[in-house]
Length: 269
Ligand code: 15L
Image 1: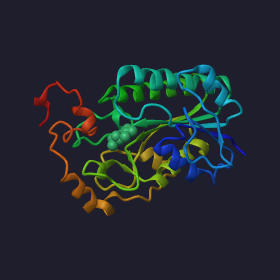
Image 2: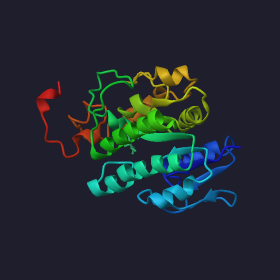
Image 3: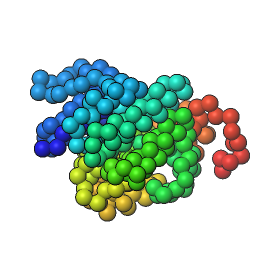
C-alpha cells in the first residue's frame, strides 16, 4: 500500500482532497503548519514548516508519493512567497530526492501563464507569462520539477490549477473552473500512471469556454465530469456584482494581473 503525503492538508484544497482520496490511498500522511481543525481520529498528521529542510525531510520519510499543495496560494509580499513557495518547493523536491520518494504532484497555477490574453488559446508548451510574484513561484516550482525528473528520475506532474471549487464563481471562472473530483482524478494520474516522467496538465474541468489545450492529460486518461456551463446563470449573476477591471478582464489571470499594474495599457486591445 503506497504511503501518500499531502502537504497543505489544512487548506481548502487539501481538506477536500484528503476526503476524496482517503478511500483510494488508505495510508495518507497529512502535513501543514498546524493540524486541520477537523482531523479525524484515524488520520495521520505531522506538522512541518516548508521553509525548514530538516522538517520537510522528516515528513518525507517512508513516503512513496507526494501531493504538494502547501505554501502561499495567492499573491503576497515577497518574503512570504520566498519562504513558503521558493525555498519551500526547493526543500520539498530535495527532501523527496533524499528520502527516495518516487512521485511528486505539484500544485502549480494558472497564474504561471496569467498574462496570456483570454483570446489566446495555449497549451502547456508555451513560454511562462506569470502575472504575480506568486505566479513566478509556480514557474520556479515547475522548473524544479523538470530538473528533479530529468536529473534524478523523480516522476513529476505539475497541475496548473484554474479555480478549484464547487462551482464557477464568475465569468472568468467559467473558463477555468476545476471540480474537486476532477482534481482528484488528475492527482491519481500523477501518482499512478506508468507513463509519467515530467508532465504539465491544466487543472480545469470540461469547460466549453476553456482557453487551454489539455490533450496530454486526456491522453493519460483524464475524463473530467465538471461542466462549468451548467452553472452559467450563477456565475453571470455573481459577475454582475463585480466592478469592471479592464486589465484583469482582458488577461487569463484576471485580478492577479491588475494588482500593482503600471504597465502598457495599449497592449490591451
Ligand atoms: C489560484 O492560483 C489561487 O490559489 C486561487 O485562490 C484563485 O485565485 C485561483 O488561482 C484563480 O485564478 O481564480
